[in-house]
Image 1: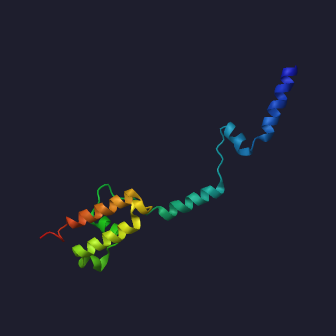
Image 2: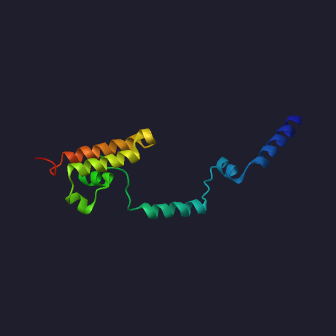
Image 3: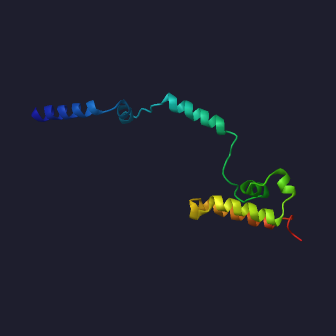
Length: 122
C-alpha cells in the first residue's frame, strides 16, 4: 500500500508540472497553432511563384542576373565591363570578407560563362 501511495504522489507531482502541449504529445494529439498556420499560409501565398535558388547548370540569363547586368547593359557589354562587374560583385561577396564561398563560386562561374559566349568570340 505504501508503494502505491508513493507512486501516486510522484505521478501527480509530475502531472502537475506538465504543460498542455506535453499532455497532447503524450496522448499522440497533434496541436495546431492557428497563428503558425496563418503565417505558413501567408508565406506559401507570397512565395508560390518564386522558385528561388540556382539552376542545375548556369545559363546566360542567370549569369547576367548574378553579375547585375540588365537590359541595355547586355547590348553594350564589353570584356572590360564584364571584368568591372565581376570585380564589384567579388568585392561585395568575397569569402575573406564574410561572403559566401558558394556565392563567390557562382560569380566566377557567371563570368567564365559569359566570357565564352558568342559576344566575346572573335
